[in-house]
Length: 249
Image (cartoon, rainbow, N blue to C red; front, side):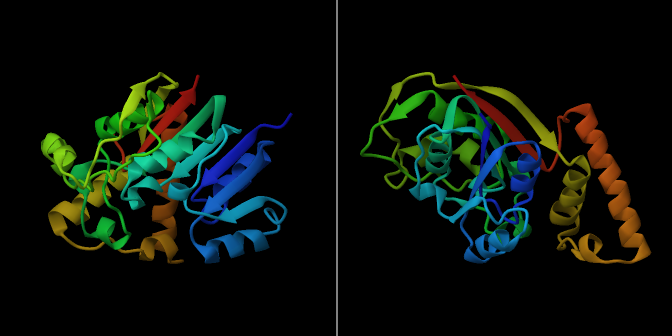
């Protein structure tokens, strides 16, 4: 039987194609109608199950071996609800993979422009995940989580959770899974982001990413080799992106 992969926030279908090549039966949820249309027109994805959907309004039946949400939950005010719904699609023995923008102190204008409610410190994301995988919420209550920025949530956690607009769901304790790895990715991006957002206070130019000049191609080549080296090493203690893997028991 083929393993099943679900990509929540499938975007342009890159991860769907990757896992399909690995032999998985793939499916995707995507909020943007245009992206769904483009993926369905892609010859590699024409016959795959790709749906326009909002993860905050969906629950699964524990049917997927791998469920991924790459750069998704930072766009959602109630990220605990999003994580809980992601988790509902993971079958016993399966894996939930979440990637998010790392380090709350890097939060800046670029994040605001991209619609990020927050960037994540590892301890905060793990706290949110553990709240989901080790508890069973009551069916009648779930609240928005605070859009902390620059460590605000960490400093004022008790105050924020005490406010009426951020009610804490009533839960019973039940261990459902375990975090199997926590790592970072894109160390060069971390220093670039820090330089432009926190020191120069200037927007990061997108020309390097899309320009076809010799300089831009050379920079992309070097960055690609560095990222491949990171992949070979197996993760670093610092990077622009935080990656967490969680296995359901």
